Image (cartoon, rainbow, N blue to C red):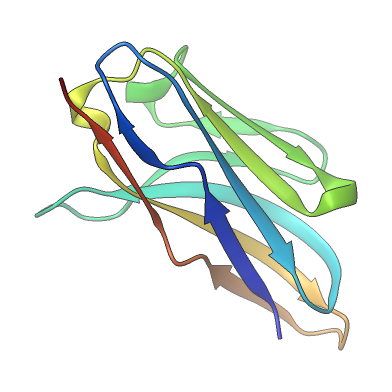
Length: 120
């Protein structure tokens, strides 16, 4: 069984920083694309940032220059460094991964989500 477990969310003042982590565990053969999504109340879930196994990244326009996604392939972990946070960044942040299990099954997995609240 594969699990994605996020950590690092919390309450931060505008202009502050947070670092989210997401560790994948279980029988994993390889992880291709990993991404961070977010969903604010009353809004649809959106892709915030993604990273391929080779390190290529993409970001939604509203976070470019403020957020940085990275990954440690040896630890099956993806990170999201969030700087200059704004109230509109408030949302539940979800980790997502496209991976191949040890049984050779390719599938998409979600973490349980971690709350990020930006408020003074």
